[in-house]
Amino acid sequence: MSCYLFGAVWAPVDGWEGEEIEILGQKGEVRLVREGDLGFLFSELGIDGKLKATRKAAKQHSQILTDLLTVQETLAPVPFGTVIESEQEIREMLDRNRDQIENVLDNIDNQVEYGIKVYWDPDEVARRLAEESDEIQELKSKIKRGGVGNTFEATLEVGELIEEKMGDKKEDLKQDVLKSLKDVINDWVVNEPFDERMAANLAFLLDKEDQDELDRTIEDLGKSEPDYLTINYSGPWPPFNFVNLELR
Amino acid sequence: MLILDDLLFRIPVQIGKEVLNEITERAEKEMGHYSSTEEVLSELKSLQVSLDLGEITEEEYDEKEKLLLDELERLQ
Image 1 (spheres, rainbow over the protein chains, first blue to last red):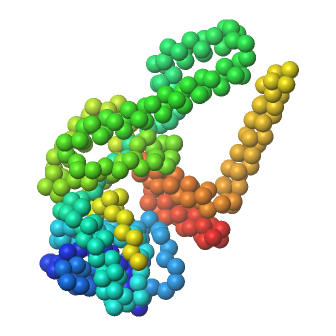
Image 2: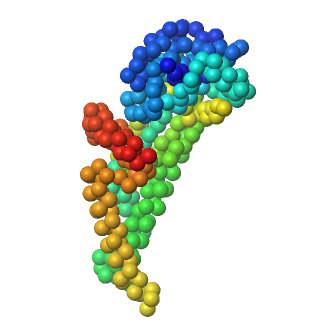
Image 3: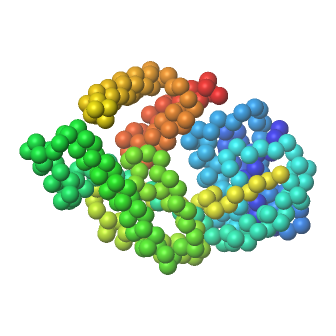
């Protein structure tokens, strides 16, 4: 058996003891190892060898942490698949990393994370931006009339201009989102969009009590943005993007 | 003249080669062959986006994810 880790908390923890969970096809109980006022939530599972990071398993990990967060004020999550040999090793790890863990818990005290991903159809956006740009329209007309020295180069230039405008549009979107949320959130992280259909990818940290206000603000934001954008909004999550525990 | 040659010949040929490389790469991906872990990870991210946008079902995602994770294991 190994200890599958969930995250660090201030001990004691109420309302969770013996909570049954299922992850990686196994059932177990959430338990707490405690060293003074710090604790680490874990589950003893029969894990053998490499863990497969499927979406389902990662989702189970996130959901367990999110459920724990409803009964625990502050939780510093560890990444999916963090496994340690024994309870004794967890205690020793808590001891060695006490200062770091205390700092992290202080920084995220009673806060949760939400994520926003903004999606678009890149071809549709490119078409609209080209239509709206006098510079691009003029260049396209010149190409059609045969009024450019090198048609191929001019076509490349149109492509480059569109790319540039799409980059500007992404930046504007990001700023729109941050501006509309600045009074609700405590911190944010801008993640790199990882697909051409993704225009923005942000994570926010806010006090638990501000969640309803965030909902309302996001709803208003959705109404004010153009209809070719899709806003995907998720949370609450434990603050994955705001915690970087380097446990030795 | 060197510059003119570049514009008239090298760039279209270069682009021709790039297009052919891309076609080959896509064909390889269709057959489930990837040449690097980065490619597989990029494909996994793209799959996630397709799921988020409702372009595929969860079952379709899980099916494709399994193939990609097997491929990742093969490459690592």
